[in-house]
Each structure stands twice: as C-alpha cells, then as structure tokens.
Image (cartoon, rainbow, N blue to C red; front, side, top):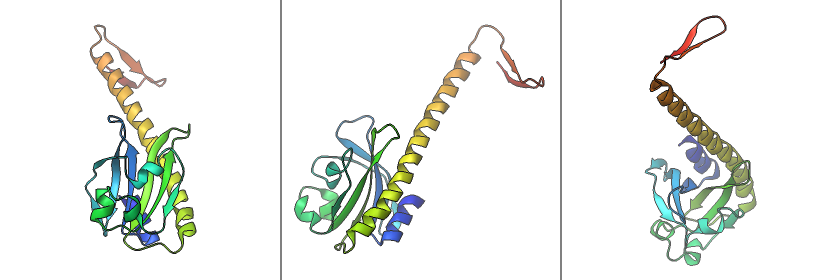
Length: 171
C-alpha cells in the first residue's frame, strides 16, 4: 500500500497500482495494490484486452500523456474515472519473466512525461524485486510446510539436534 500511495503522491497522480499477471487465468491481471483519490482501494481482476496495460506487460514502458479515453473506449476503469493520462512500466523477474506492471493515471494530461517515466522506472525496479522476493518466500514457506507434514507423519521418531546438543526438531 505504501508503495502505490507514495508513487501517486510523488508524481501527483489520481491513481497508482501494481497489476500482476494472473497465475490462474490467461489474459487476466490482478491488482496487488490499488491507490485511488488518496486512499487504498480493494484489489480486483481485469481482462488485459482493450486496456492500456495490454501495451505494457511483457513489452515496454508506455506513456499516454493525453486522450487515453479516446484510445481505449471499451475500458471501464479509464472511461468510468474519466482518465486522460496513463504511464505504465512493465515488471520483469531477474530471469526476464513478465510479472506484471506498475501504472499511474491522471484525470488531466501530463506535461512532463519523461520525468514521470524516469521515476516510474525506478519504482518498477523496486517493485519487481519485492514481488520476486515475496514469490521466493512463499515457495520456501510451502516447502517448509511440506517438510513438516512429512516429518510429523513419519513412522519412526526423528530428532534433529544442533552441534551444541540443543534439539531443533522432534516429531
């Protein structure tokens, strides 16, 4: 939440969000954090097709300094919030896998898109590293849970001791 609120505040934007590629549904994104009009909002899923995000994820950064509603007439968020400007930067893992994007939107045009894009790229690098760290941590926690389940169900007694003799695990 702090990330998107800080981004919106720093760049004087009406909205900022991180959207991740959905692990379950092809052609869908899920917001990881969505900040709008000075407050954190509920996360949501949305289809990629017909959104400014479609031109960003897995590709390159995009700046639409004005007239976003005219370019994406079928997008409910852009239309409903009367968005005029959009800047999106793709997020990639350290191996180059597309993770999603970080984006900001404003109801008025953008006069200094290069400055905004520069700041966005720095934020995107931080966000991608944090997302990747969270993924690794989640996998480690899953592996630990699996290990503990196996150990707890073992037919034989298992004791793990540290070199100083202190017990660190007993099933």
